[in-house]
Length: 143
Image (cartoon, rainbow, N blue to C red; front, side):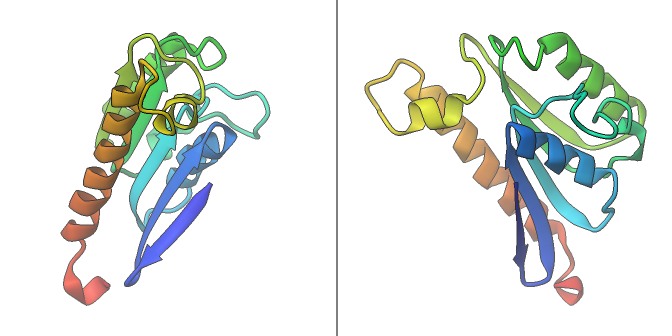
């Protein structure tokens, strides 16, 4: 997981377990301008609490990326997390990529000849656009 602070504005991004940690941090840090999770585990027994359990405490905006073939994460868990966040009024944007599994960004972004290269590029563009939109919302005085 990475935490980026740009002119006083804080955003996070995490991949796999780091994606889970980024989601959990959104429940503890109301000052985050943006949270991005790539294939984070919505129901994770390896952590004190799972993102599904603390969804009502999360602060948005949150962007999530998952491949629909990620059996470790489970799309039913992604939907439970989405439902919990929506019920809590959390701003979110979730993207499910057909035919892709866990770790798809690294697996396909490096080689434009792979069939999933375009989907990986799309996910990264969405991430950068999300940060731009979220960071632009922060009042200048708060930066």
